[in-house]
Length: 121
Image (cartoon, rainbow, N blue to C red; front, side, top):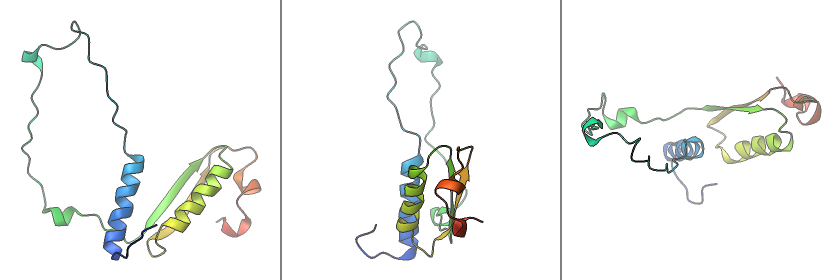
């Protein structure tokens, strides 16, 4: 929930950043390789930090008109329901197009336990 008013574009950028942060691979510190396994300095490739963008940064900015959220579930039950409620309550209504719940084998199916007929397609 945003505490200060922001423009729609800023809100969608903020939402995109939060989604990315939540789902980006976590960086894990790796243990150094033992000396016998480490590559000699002469064999370590250098990484160039020089690059050219194909377009201006402004042209690369993502401004979605709407988003669809896909929630894969298997034996999730209450967690799935809470996730759907959270997405619905915390996503600007003009941005949220749909929430798709994919039940991947729950027994009994979520359609019988948590999802009423009025929300099923």
